Image: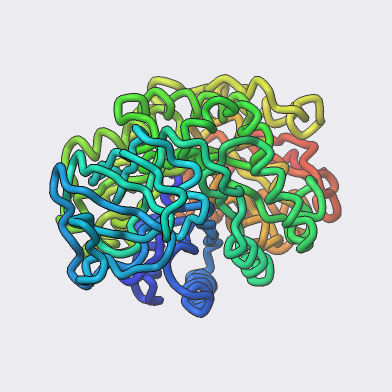
Length: 501
């Protein structure tokens, strides 16, 4: 499958059995959300993925998702509290259990929030959105000299509020740092435990990504841009409208992008998100960066065994737009049907990919890749032309590090890329790359041996049939080359030889 499926782990899916079933159903990257759970929980989830991956002999990647400066409601009584329309609400940073008798003052329901500068930064007239915008408040005054300081807000749209729900302030200029102290702990944890990707939440500017990369260099998980050693790619999550003002520089700085449509829709407007999604994906293609579309892909499958038709169309359109991966969140973390949600999304992706193969057999190469002058990038572009001209069944590659195959993926061919290597970390990183099927293989003794073994593998797994055109990409001599520098074209099963270099 060309488009990858990412699934979020949680109470509904964190056990080894369910992880194995989701891998069989099509998951190639698992997301561990650092917003929920403890480091012991994260380690258990990671170990379960690694154990199942080893058992099924298939590279599977793990993405750690940093919380970022997410502003949340404090503690609320069990069962939550109802915020009635036109009612009055006080928000303070001093802790309080909302809904208890002592948390009602002068008819105002008092709730707490852990963001210390809140009262200083929110101005009268600005909206305060709770629970992903399900509840809307409007700030009437900022009582900064009161004891304790607090905001006085009026409820515009009411609803049931429970503990730890998010607070969005779309019109407020916030001073929150890109990385919190807890984020720094999570980065260190991810580096120590060999995560494969790290997602940075609420990115507003390219400097936020650069700050994270600097921290990672200190932790020796980003020693250089050559992807050697413990190279941990950064996925910038686009959730704030401010990010769209600097989106090109963010795409350039990050290793990949996630269009996190949930918070983005709350922060701007629902109708603006589809346009932003298309713009971001197009820009990622221009820069040769992988892009993930996330949030509410099959939201109704949290409770229902089947999605709505609108959700299926939304997921397919994300793929038609050019998403490298689509991500399930609550559907697999807490939903009743985690495996079924993966199966459905894989079916949608498979049908969409098959359609794209008929209408767009050859895509434009990236336009702004900074290193396009390099040999591997030029060779990868040539492979795309050859694949289109031959109508090849697939590309087969041997590589020492994933940078070479990443160049092939950037060209977004509508044919799969079967990529072999003995570099386990690099193979896992390719789990996010468009069209790439990463597989483990010891370094071959010769080119002829590799081609023979690879053809047998492709045929056994049903990816190619006798006589199908194939394009091989590898380094010469294969016994020691670290970069791709050679292209071989053949038909599967051709006995004429001519490839032993």
